[in-house]
Each structure stands twice: as C-alpha cells, then as structure tokens.
Image (cartoon, rainbow, N blue to C red):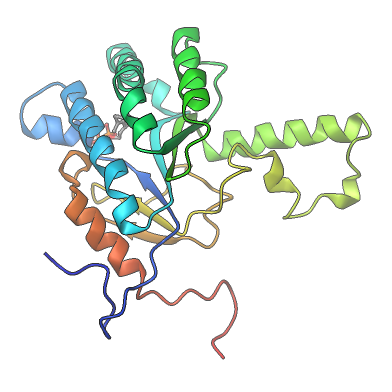
Length: 246
Ligand code: FPP
C-alpha cells in the first residue's frame, strides 16, 4: 500500500478537512454480477460505513456523501422504493454506532418530497448525534445543487420582503448562509467514483475551489485503502484560489 499520508520529504501531508463524495457505480457493480441494481446499493451502503470509520485516521473532519439526487426520482419505482428502504434501514442500524463513534450526522436536500417516516428518522439521527464532533457526516438526500440555490434564493427573498435583509447586503458571503450547508466549510476535495467525470448537480456553489478526483473504481469497490491513497494525493496539490504563487 502507498504511504498515502507522507509527502516527498516524509513529512505528513496536509489532509483535506472536508471531503465530498459522489458515490457512483452501484448499478454497474451489480450488473457485472448479474444481480439487481439494489444489490449494488446495499454493497454501497457497506462501503459508506467503512469510509466514515476511516475518516479520523486520515484527519478528515467533514465527509459529505451524495446518496440521492433530485434527479434520481426518474429511476424505476422499484429502485427508488428500494433506496428509500435502504436509507431507513441504514439509519436504524447505524444510529447507535455513529453515536458511539463520535460522528455528527446532518442531512442536506429538500425533505418535502421524502416520506414522513424517513424524515422522522433523519431528524432523530441529527438530534441523537448533535453533540458529537469527531467526524461530521453530511448525507445529501433528495439533494440537487440548483435546487438548493433556488431554495436559498427563495428564503432570502422572504427575508428581503420582511425587511430583515437589505438587498445591497447580499454578496458571496451572505448568500451561503441561506444554503443547506451553511454550517459546513466548503469541500476541499470532491471524489467521484466509477470513471464518470462530471459533477451531476452536487455542491455547485460550495465546490467553486474544490480539488476534484475522478476514480475508475465503482463505489462498492472503493475500499478505505483507496480512500487513503486519494486523500494522500490531495496533500501534494498546489491550491491557489485564484491567486498567483509568490
Ligand atoms: C449512484 O450509483 C448511486 C446512487 C444513486 C445511490 C447511492 C446510495 C448508496 C451508496 C447507498 C447507501 C447510502 C447510504 C447513505 C446508506 P448508480 O446506481 O447510478 O450506478 P450506475 O451509474 O453504475 O448505474
């Protein structure tokens, strides 16, 4: 295994504080095995557990994962229902472990279209883990970057209409306070598995200066070792945020 956390001089390379992951490839993983797509999603859920557990050792404080997009409703009813069932099962089964492992869980996305039983579980898990601070896990569920920006703009417009906000005070520092992610730092590194090189409406505002890694591995094959290698590569990147090197 590559010593992913060491730089060329042997010193520990800086880790990305916030890693966001587009977990892609569950369906192809299952198809390759002649199994229904949901089998791939279940294998993917197992990886979620392992990757969350790997974060403290890699100094990754914030992990955000794309579980279900605003566009994923276009899938078959069987797949959508199976995914919703899987999310409920994951929350029920993992709640205690997440609590004991110091993981604070948050959900982003529009909850309005989600079934009340799932929303109750999401609210419950957020409340249960609210005092944790070891790892901040954010699960994007019925999330779309454009939808998030539109909902933020709507809330902002209300505040203007109510006289709580001056239009001239709206800028790139005030706007993100209206996003679902308002309490989170921007992602330093965005990983997409499965070989597709696109961002699919994920964290559009927040990833303006993120580094990207497109990995061929399908999500259910994305092991903690591969995660450690990708995180390790981040340390050698030259991030300039639009400035020139001095
Ligand atoms: C994309 O792969 C994956 C999804 C739409 C679902 C992601 C869900 C999980 C990893 C399940 C567990 C998540 C949690 C939080 C418990 P795809 O199905 O589009 O794959 P394909 O491109 O190969 O068809």
